[in-house]
Image (cartoon, rainbow, N blue to C red; front, side, top):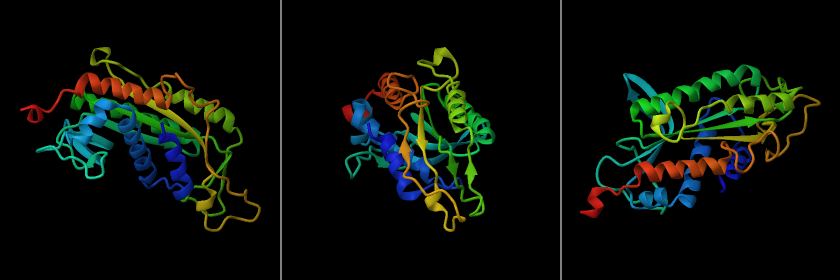
Amino acid sequence: MKALEAFVRHLAENNYHPRSDAHSNAVCLAIVDDLLAHCPAFAERAQAGEIVAKLNHTVKVHYQDWNIDLAVGPPPGSPIPPSNGSITFETPATIELALEAKAIMTEHGKARRNRLRDPQAFHGYAHSYNEKTIAVGTVAVNVSRVFWSPTRSTDDITEHAKIETLGKSTVELFRGLPLRHTPAEGPGFEAVSLLVVDFDNLRKNPAPPYGAPRPQDPKLVTGTPAPQTGDPMHHATMIHRICAAYEDRWQQRNPRRSA
C-alpha cells in the first residue's frame, strides 16, 4: 500500500500550510488509490462508473453543514465510467463513504484536543445522514523536534523539547476514537488510521534566522509511536476495514447495469 509514502512525498514536494487543504487532499487521493488497488468491490464499481468521488464536499444534515474531505457515492444519473481507468471525480448523489483527514503538525498541547473534536463530530454527522455510510478518519501526527508554521514570522521556529512524550501522548489521545463494525454497535468510525511523520517544514521558510536548524527531508515514522502492522489503527488495517464494510453494505450492483 502506497498512501503513506505518497503523503510524505507530497510534504517533500509542497511543504505544509495550515490554512491550505492541499495536504488533506493528498491524503484522500492516496487512500482512494489504495482502495482501488486493494479493494475489488470498490474498484469494480469505480471502474464501472457506479460510484464517483468529490474532494471538499458539503451537504446538509439536520439543517447543518457537514463538510467532508472526501465523499464517495453513486452519480446523480447514469454511471460515469472514468476516463483515466480509476474513478470519476464528480458530485455524488448520495454518500456511501465519507473521509475526514486531520493533521497535528505543531503545538500538540494546544491543537490536539481541538482536532479531536472534529472527527468525533464527523462520524456523528455521517451516521445521522445514513447509518450505512462508511465513516473513515485519518490523522497525521508530526514528531519533529522543530517546526516552522507559515502563520508565524520567519524567525519564530517552534521547538518541541519533549516531542517523544508529546508525540506518543497525541497518538494515544486519538486512539480513543471509537470503532464499530455495524450500526448496531452504536456511534463510531468504520475505520481510522494514525500516521506518524517527522517533518520540520523549514524549507517553506523564505528567510530563516541565523543559526536556524538545517531543513531535513520528511520521513515516515514506522517505529514507536506509530501503529504497527495488525494494529486496529494501522493504515493497512484501515483499508481492510473500509473494504469489508464496503462489500457488506454497498457491493450490490446498480440495477440499471443488470437490466
